[in-house]
Image (cartoon, rainbow, N blue to C red):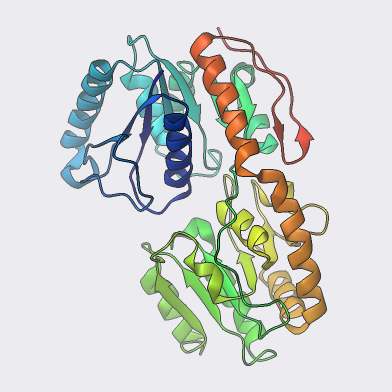
Length: 376
């Protein structure tokens, strides 16, 4: 089978990670794989690809709106030349562009939503075009039940829930009973709520004077976050080292993980932290954390409640026993999202999309999902 993956770029993001994983998995199954990166200027990828997988950067972001339109024409031509049996696209805007670009092409399409499309900031035209383009899909892959429920009724009939997998890595955090260190990971942008986290950490810093907060990632909010840390007298306690050189290098930097997002699609780093045995605190933001942090695997705090986040971090930082208990519970929950289990669900969707078979009930997070059929 020929499969084309379409995504935004080749950087250190969650969508990039899962595309890399599925692409190599399907390559091992004997498929011919090509990856089209609309905003990448070159084929260099944070997640390395096999030479047998064709990487086609289209460089759209660097050249303005006119060039962006040309990129879509170029994408259509390249997809037509490749002749895939199946196109799999990732992320809200890329799904829309792929649906519109492939009009008239014979390939079937699987669209994978990776973010909270209700809360993302979007031009009204994107909001109008999205549901129209989604009608081109054979299947819509959502990451949580909450995301599926948020779809318009006419699209739910072609939707399935597949969470992200967690890959257990060799990197291990400092022991739960050691000196507490707080870690957060994500693009430095408003969605990730790092401004809320720094404000919450200010309340913790005096009570736990040896604790540091390290925020890994890069993005447009860096200067504002650095200034906030200085204004709060936390210049030496809050660190922003940028993107790690390896995908899970941040795990070695602390034994407490915090997710401070205002909203999510499905937080990969939360699963990685659980699998690594980091005691975890998270905002109960839409979507993802509440569906992941079950069975005592972490502490959920009402979304945006900085005082509540401060108190939870203080408890975890001061209580070695609590850290150890959360670490053990987190590892147990993370096993539900094993790579083999999630890739088997993707295999099911890929094969059924290619052959237009009915959808079986997917299993995710230890629970049985709903049964859906293909759309018209």
